[in-house]
Length: 193
Image 1 (cartoon, rainbow, N blue to C red):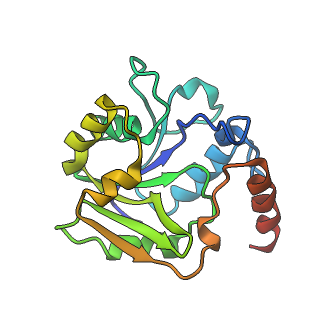
Image 2: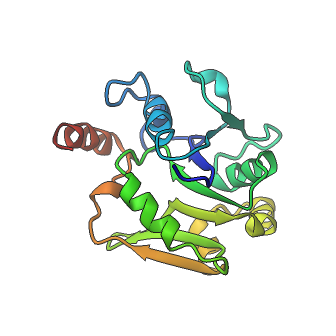
Image 3: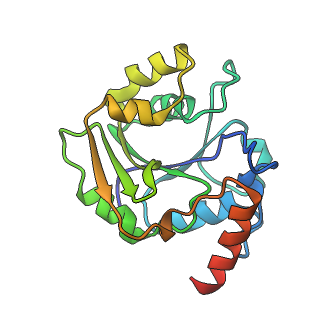
């Protein structure tokens, strides 16, 4: 079990999916969020779900609700709220829509973490995976500034921080479900996984 807290980011708009992807049924679970929470609780000592409103979930979990004085659907707000809620220097961030990131990928990222890095992020030939990696509380002022400037691009933050990238030649674990076709592909992948 890894001691770094894991935060599952499930507070997005899911506009490309057309419905809340955190609530899609997955792998025999009522929702993708419950599937992710259950499996990640076997890997991390402490797991949290960052969301807008926990009442949409019908299962018990450690929820961290975004400050509702902001109408922003972006990870920047999720990071600020998570670091305010948790007494920790670093968190492992994972998007709710990446159900195939396994203990192997997580361990490789954790082992690459050095104290000098602000972030340790997965990278594949398809690009960086900003919501799969470690973020340091040192970035809290940056997140606040980005929130105030309405700039929610994590790529911008990573370029302007001490970021360590961990390369993965296999892109399959990083399949994320942005569109209905991605969800369909994920369901097909489940049967072969």
